[in-house]
Image (tube, rainbow, N blue to C red; front, side, top):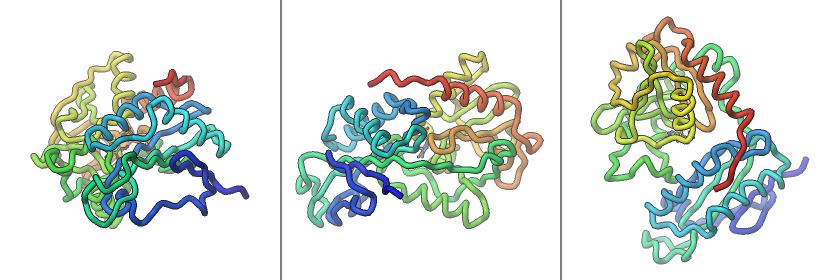
Amino acid sequence: MTEPMIYIDGDFYAKSQAKISVFDHGFLYGDGLFEGIRAYNGQVFLCREHLDRFYDGANCLLINLPLPKRETRAVLYECLKRNNLKDSYIRLIATRGIGDLGLNPRNCADRASLICIAASITLYPEELYRKGMKIITSAVQRSHPECLNPRVKSLNYLSNIMAKTEAVNNGYEEAVMLNHRGEVAEATGDNIFIVKNGTIKTPPPSAVILEGCTRNCVISLARKAKYELREETLARFDLYTADELFLTGTAAELIPVTACDGRNIGNGKPGPVTLDLLKKFRQFIKTYKDKGV
Ligand SMILES: Cc1ncc(COP(=O)(O)O)c(C=O)c1O
């Protein structure tokens, strides 16, 4: 079997040979950022949106990306080609690069390191999309935006991992994190939506969330289908009393949730709005064409 080929700073390496330095500040300090991107049928899905977020994040972190957007996009496609993949989950990573053991970013290379891995993943079994999943709210808060802003998809995912650990250790697939004000923010790797009395609601970016590309895509599909949709602050109470609940993310796509903290959502089955949006989302993917950056 041929090994997956990984892109690191301009070259491709077989998986067993794809290595970064132990002095890389991404490894030492989580000093970097990443994107999780899907490709469907050879098209990089929401390519512009993902690259815009990646470049905005790098700008916030004062990380000097080595390539212009157009060339980074070409790396994504080259990665698919080298790995003979049409449907894939692509991980794009930038680290501040190799430095010394000190924090000072000036002691790192002038340009970031860019890494791209194309793999195949299915996050959840198809059955969960039909039956829905059960989630909990986590004791781990979303970090304060003045500390580590979750709008940047940084390499520091420790609080998400602690919340995910809490979920998994308690027998659940996913956990919802609240922000520093106790409002609903998002799940550990997904955005959250509820449906109440026919209106779809999702927390606004000011609720301290990563503004998901899938979230924004589902918002526009819902509005196009004439659903009433509001970005609104949500409390745990709103989750418990929702008629429907679902999560969106690149890896999970759109997945129904049927219970939260032991409370059934609606009748405990995926609801009609969720299933309709799931259908519309899957149709959208099928005909999607990447128009470039
Ligand atoms: C914390 C968090 N929220 C939301 C999302 C969903 O974002 P997207 O739809 O862009 O994958 C992700 C995944 O990237 C995430 O890590």
